[in-house]
Image (cartoon, rainbow over all chains, first blue to last red; front, side, top):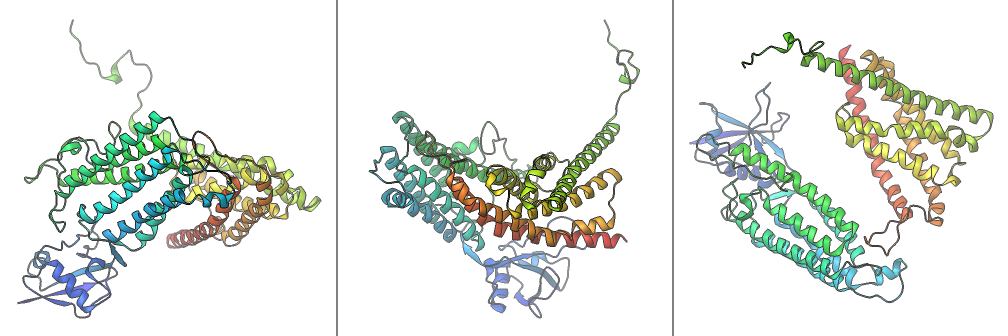
Length: 313
Length: 245
């Protein structure tokens, strides 16, 4: 037996003439594939399928879950189902996105360290003395972004496989610009290092947080299956027992360590901006988890925890 | 000793009236309206002065004297606009901070960061076009809001003016701003004003000259964005009033 599914745009216009036909047992990702088969432009990760909103009703439309059976979305004994297709625009995989974002800082920073000609070109002539702090900073920075790239390919498990292409430009602009901005000042011929003790404390603390951050990522990874199944889970263990987004917390503190050691306004500006971005994410994630894990219908209740930065949030 | 409960309204120790929440809310709302009415009309008067003095100076002498004539009311009226950011943040008005911030930012930059800081720019003809573009726009805007707060509505011709005159005055204003920054560049480079040099404890440097170049760069996408935003606002505002009739 076959089912018929009509595919319309958000304005009601039929996107696929006559709709698509699916087997009774089809799941939503089969529907994605069928749509892609009829319209090559709409590869599955570019599709966002929702049920049409009832006229006059408020609230968000129901997004179709790729793993659910299509039949489950049929209302009553209706003959056919109408789904609304939104084009999410060109997509790239998260791995691709993260790789390009992180590659920039990894390459740009050492350029300022190894090619002081840049500063000569701007007008700073004379002999250049390299302070140990500058060398350690370069290793620390590069290790950090190398770690991020490795985690992207080997540790992280993404629930949504893709991100819009426009994010590549936006995110790369952010990471690459800040990378250059910080690198310029730390590797500057007129750089003034802090005391030896402060530098060691800063880098030591930062490294500790990077290790903690790595462990957080391992814990998060184990919440999900290999292809991102599992959806939302309550994070457990280590710092997650105290803080919902312990991974962001350790990341922020790691940058704080770097700044304590290198002491540049540029670095601190980056810290503030990065922290506020991550705080926004953390607030949203915490709220989402609380909403899902409300203690009803057998679901566990989300425990009382800090969101991201104890003792403030 | 036994304590008995006496409701507040009957308690002889509580003097005067009790104020319930609804009365409080409407009192605060009136205070808000009075404050905003006074604010808008005061700034309106400031900008009206600017326009009047500018035109009078142009008529009596020439464009080189315009800045000197309008300086004080211009600085006062333009800087008062900082309050508007506060109003948006506190929720006194509905305008999103993201729309007002770039506009106020650029105005304050040109008023204080260019004209006041580099007197060599003051005698340029672009000062006149700048000041006239700004003042006409603001006169319309502040009277519009002044009437809305005071009377609850503004006449449709004023609404039309508010959402139509920008077609002329955005381009003229932006061109004047960009032009004046460009003219100031050699003076900025020659002076060391507002520059932070290395080495210093915080390993920071700021070069006002390069910052001005970056500012010039932002004007093009920024100005375009504001212009398109106003066109969108115009559609919304004028169609809404059309439907009401």
